[in-house]
Image (cartoon, rainbow, N blue to C red; front, side, top):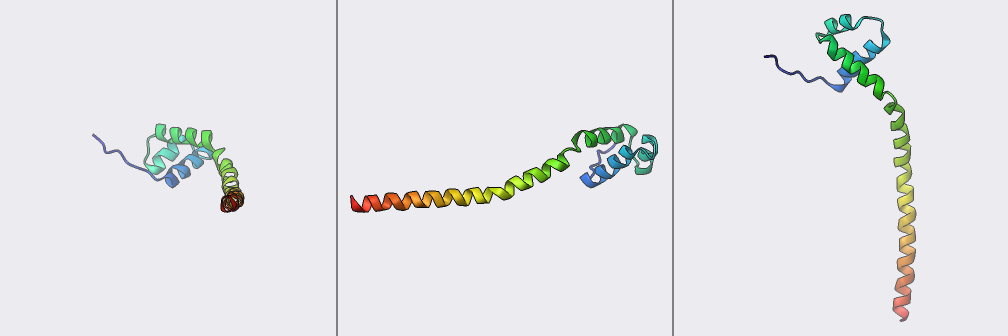
Length: 92
């Protein structure tokens, strides 16, 4: 029985991109990399189904960069409320 090999995501992307380009047949690519043609087809399919995630990553990055600003505003608001309540308790 054969051992199951693990491939890096970079390797899978390279093979899938080459398959998506369609300059070579799936069989040629599989032979070149020592893979089963069905594996190349599966990686190509997954690659094409998830290619949109590249652009979503930019949206997520922008959103995460704006998060600290929101947090700082919230902290400032809470500090003002705390100071206000402290003054009320001091005078009470």
